[in-house]
Length: 345
Ligand SMILES: [Fe+2]
Image 1 (cartoon, rainbow, N blue to C red):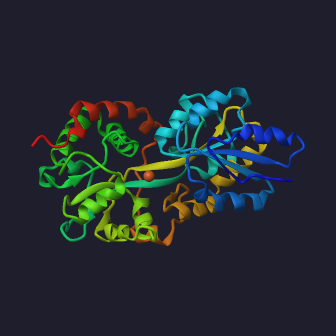
Image 2 (cartoon, protein in one colour):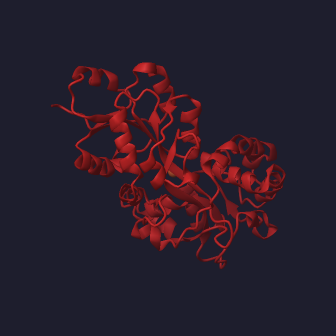
Image 3 (cartoon, rainbow, N blue to C red):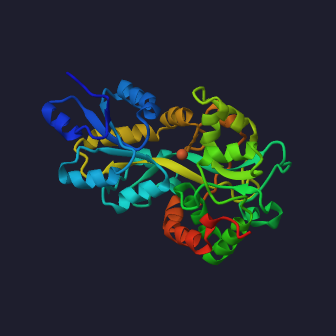
């Protein structure tokens, strides 16, 4: 039987499926914001273990809108994405359904899943401090200290409204409240070397070039830069920085998640649940984490050697439901303090 393993946005998955029919072998349709090549090793391992075929529809935007438009006939079974913001967007957009499953709930700690079972985290990425190896002698730092005038003119960040920063700022609100966070954001803004700009990798580049001494960035980009054979200059950017895990001595470093959700009208629900059980397992989390330079959510499951070389991460134990609940306020505070305008002088 002809099968498609990977499809690109714009190709009609439903039409292809309709050409099959009910007598098909078990399969599961995955709508993914994650690049197909990143998840394929995992899906191959799943098919080998269960005999269930996987079809991937990769989208770089509009995943929720697409499932909404497909309505009751949507072929989507499982949604794979990164960032708590996108998981919550799927739930709020009404394209997920709750899953209460013993296996999934055993392997995914409660802090990393929706209390209603509408989304589940699989891997985490730390939002850490990139620091100049040359100019920063500090071996420890806290997020709170990023507002300390000692860093005046020395910090670089990407857009304050980017979901990675919003997740972090939402965690600050959850820990300290809105008033503290607003004051903290004002101090942080005054410590910026320039207006927020670029992506996480370009903050490492800015440290290399001397534009700033420290920056906020996600852990996996360091792995991606260190191994980038296509753009080898990125290896130099990564070599110029060290990772400081903020708040390692107290509440732990802010992490964000990549995760999954059961699609609202999953036509292959049994297979979808089997896939979700599989993805939850420590073994699958490790394969996944290894591919993407992230950390498995299951305590004791190991990240890749490169990620281990950054040092151990102690993740903040805040629940993602709490982070999700504070995202909107975090976004409002970013605007209120004018973070994206950069420092006042
Ligand atoms: Fe990213």
